[in-house]
Length: 388
Figure 1 (cartoon, helix red, strand yellow):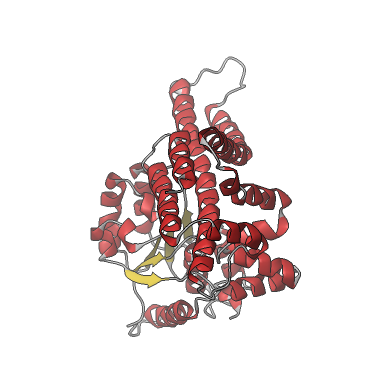
Figure 2: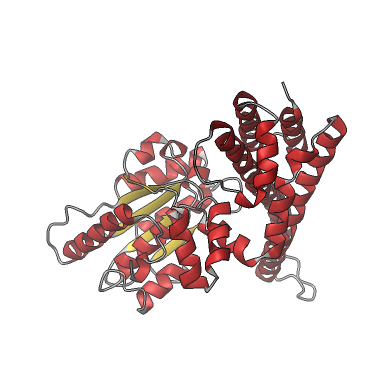
C-alpha cells in the first residue's frame, strides 16, 4: 500500500472500501452519482488495529485531489490534525462531554473552507456521555451535504445504538505479527530480530510494538510484569506484587500527566490574564478548580490505561501456558520466557490456567467500573496464586 494508506497494516479489505469511497466522493463533488460514499462511518477494532489511523487516512484521502497521495499539503495537514476542514477529537478524560460535541456539531453544519469536505473525526466515540451522544445524533442522522463524520470505538457495542445504526461500519482486525515487524523495519529502521520480538510481544499493537522496540524502560516494565507469577507463593507476596504493579502504573502515567497538566495550566493562565499586575478575572477560581478536577480524572485514566497494558502482558503469559498445556503447536507470544512458561504449564492444569486468565479479565473489568486499582489487582494476584 502507498500514500496515506501505507501504515494501515494488515487492513487491505478496509483500505479497498475506503479507496472506493474516496473515488465516489470525487464523483459526488462533481455532481455525479456516488453510491459508495457515506456521510457517517464507524471504525471498530481491538487496540492497536489502527482504527484511528484508518479514520485519519480516510480524512486525508477525502481532502486530496488524487485520493490520498500522502505527499501533498492536504494529506500532510489532514494526517497531522492541522487541516482547516478536518477536526480531530480525542480525549484523555474518562468521557467526551456534551459541550465539546456541541462545538463539533456547530462546525459540522458549516460549509468547508476549501472545495472538498468538512470531516470530523471522533477517535473515542465509546467515551461519549449520554448527553453528548444525544447532541451528536441529529448531525450524524442528517449531516450537511459536504460533511462527513468518522467515529472510532473498540467494538460496535461501545457506541449507542441510535448512532451506530446510522453509520457505515468498518471492522479492523489485529494485524499479523509479520506485517507489524515489516513496518518497524521499513519505517523505523529497526533490525529484523528486534522488530520480530516487538511485533510478537505487542500482539499486533503497532504503537506498543514501537515502544517495546525503542525504549528499554518499556521492555523492563514488561519483564517485571511477566516475572510476577513465579513470585506468588503466599498471601504476602500477592499483596506486595499487587502494590508494585499499581505503583509502576502510577509512575508510568505521572510524566505524561505532568506534561499535559503544565501545558493546560499555562494556557488557562494566559487566557485568564494571570500575572497581569492587579488583574483579577471574575470566575478565575472556578475555572482553575474545574481544570484541576479534569486533570485529576485524566490522571486516573492514564494510570488505569497503564495498568491495563500490564494486565494484557500478563494474560499473554497465561495464554502461552495454555498453548504448552494443550500442545497446540502455536507460536508463543513470549518465546523468550519459555522456561518459566513451561514450569507454570507442567505445575498446573488447563482448567487452572483458564481460571487464572478469567481472574485477569475480572480485574480489567473491575478497573473499567472504577474499583480502586489496588483492590482489583490484589484480588487478581490472590486468584493467580490459587493452585486449586
